[in-house]
Amino acid sequence: EEIWDNFEYFIRHVVPVAEEAGVRIGIHPDDPPVPELGGVPRCIFSSFEGYRRAMEMADSSNVGLCLCVGCWLEGGELMGKDVLETIRYFGERGKLFKVHFRNVNHPLPHFVETFLDDGYMDMYQVMRALRAVDFDGVIIADHIPLMTEDHRVGTAYSIGYIKALMERADAEFGTT
Image (tube, rainbow, N blue to C red; front, top):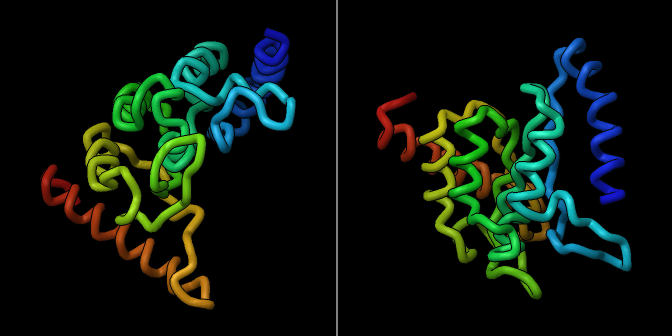
């Protein structure tokens, strides 16, 4: 509760400034989303309910999510809702500002960050869910594994893959 009290104090003071300046604050989940790391509690941005509570406390159109798909997948059942349900819920409320688009091989306790087409999540379903809620924020290729010694190769692959998924979802939804 002390962490929640601190967040509430912080967000109540930051929101008016963000609204006045036209700044949107996207809150990133704990990475990895575990209740405690190194003896330090991290219990407020490690679940769907934590995010829901934080958005209610903030009560501002300028506060939303930087939804890290990889963190959500890392958390698995600990998150309380899967990533598609999370996209629907927060997307329908205009609370998705930015998406870190990445995949992992399986949830905690042990996971490996993978290429978008090599993890346990069908990333097209993620893109489709984003399109279904008319997501208009930023999608970022994130935590990209190396393909060669040149990191740009994996980055190019990931961006091309994301672009292909976007084009497929646009075609399915009849948008451009």
